[in-house]
Amino acid sequence: GGRGFGPRRDRQPEDVAATFRDDGAPRSCTAWVPLRRATPANGCLYVVPKSCDASYDGDGDGDDARDPVKAALGGDAPQYQMVRALPVAAGGVVLLSHRVVHWGGAAAKDHGEAPRVALSMAFADPDVEPALFADGVPTTPPPLDARVALAAAQQIVYAKSDARRPHDLALFHRIFRARAELFAPWLRAKVSERFQWMEFVRKRGG
Image 1 (cartoon, rainbow, N blue to C red):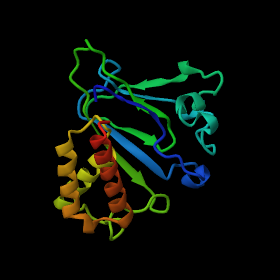
Image 2: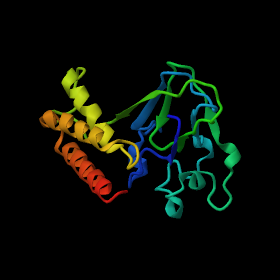
Image 3: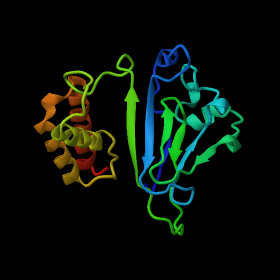
């Protein structure tokens, strides 16, 4: 958590309108739960409010797709003062629509707070995003081995080139492959492709 992460929208669908219900409720969202207090000093979340986001329910960010904050806040004259920090107590929750621009602040070097630690969980209508499991959306909590395998898969999918030691990713890959039959073909392919790419980058020295 100390380094934070850059601005993003969790989803950039081709048909943005189709990812909302008729009443405007999002069909995909993320719950962010800090296990320790999150503050501006140790790196809380920052967001562009929907009311200030020119591209929230539009068809993408156009030429500013690489800079979602600029696209959200007005393109040529972005109103950065509209950004909001979201400090949260330990055990609290921030629920974000898939279209909200958000990022995690980097911790100040001399902040004196405990490091920020948080869980992130995604929820989606199965008509918008396919189920992760081969048998579809589970009606009961998955068994422990499936949850461990899924956690390993997510470590690979979201890994950055400098974020994991090589043997960590190899271990995660072995864990996932041991229970790969539990998961949908698209997820198996995604994990395999990402792992191969990370191995390629590592061998190239990147």
